[in-house]
Length: 189
Image 1 (spheres, rainbow, N blue to C red):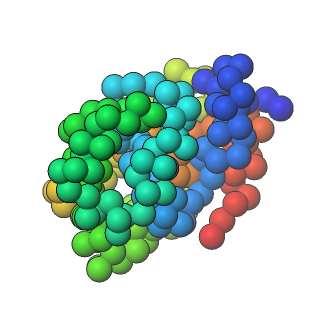
Image 2: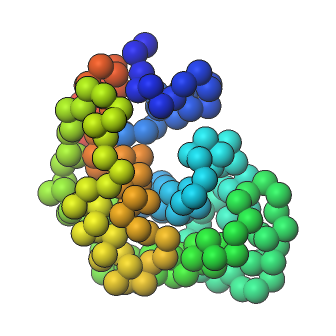
Image 3: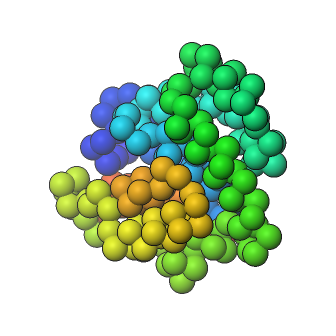
């Protein structure tokens, strides 16, 4: 199957690309997981995050925000000693705070509704033919980043937010030559 060239020949990347990346996601649980993983990706390769995903799930209680929001200093220390994840104090503490803020947001609306309103409920379908045409971030990512940071979310800069938008399918950045470009367009709420 023709794929986006960033997958290379790594089976884990290929599986992620073929089954998950760019698929419109409306599940708050999965969207929260993507937010956490993308925040940890800042400064490291996505492949590293993907290869540690199951460790992250274990370490962060399956990304259950209600549990993460209650983490205290002992949990931070536990996570800092967990060799299966990225051991960065600022990112760990940001994840705890982001879980608390997620719960506050959920008192207003679902995470899905909050995010999808930025694109009027429909994925943005880009028509890139070369990987070099895919931007690092867009005005949409800047706007969403600004709003998330205004709410107090950490590690949510425009580049991180754009990676999240791509992963969660709010933006279809599969290259047009990739078989998934057309396939993900058929997947709707």
